[in-house]
Length: 141
Image (cartoon, rainbow, N blue to C red; front, side, top):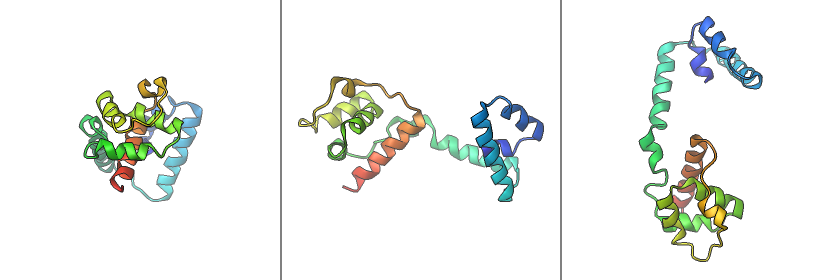
């Protein structure tokens, strides 16, 4: 967000900052000061490039199958090493077909009914990060 605001005209930047909650506004102001201190120019073209890359990374196709390419059996192996709270989060991050595929390889894993059916309640970014980390761990198995 700070990089985007950094490239805006001062009046536009202030207008947007005024709409943020105080803690978030203070944090963004600190980041803006850091960008200025680092000498990063407020170049709108730089901003467009960064936003383009970010939107590609967050595209629905990229998020549709965060565990794609990793066998459910290997993901299940990683899951078995986690505590109950993390198991619940990891299972909630999967869509229903992926969850069932992973659980099919974990007959010995005791899953609380709520854990096995809980919907994801975090942000999409956090869900993707969790699944990406899980996939990376599974890929190293």
